[in-house]
Image (cartoon, rainbow, N blue to C red; front, side, top):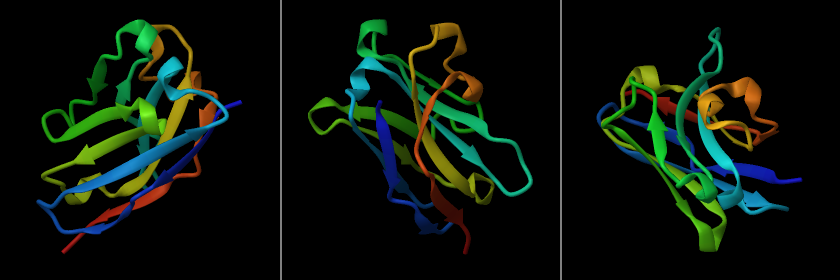
Length: 127
């Protein structure tokens, strides 16, 4: 049973950068698809980015809203997945969650297909 803990959230100005981390324990993250999702107040949880498990090539996918600004990466030695966020916008404000799953590749952007979740970390983009 893998457990996930996010950290690194905080307040950042528009145009700024922030990196959030997801540390896994009880399991090896490289054996799972690890996704980042976010949820703003009053909105549904939405897909942000995913890095697929090593056995599926370790490739990445991004939501259109963050493509070119956010980068997901994995450090196998630290069993950690990162989300580097650049050129941030006020609409990036949300609680960011990491999740791990073993579903089919066609379902890696679907929150309901992940069965391991962290507690979330707040990211606020404001001047």
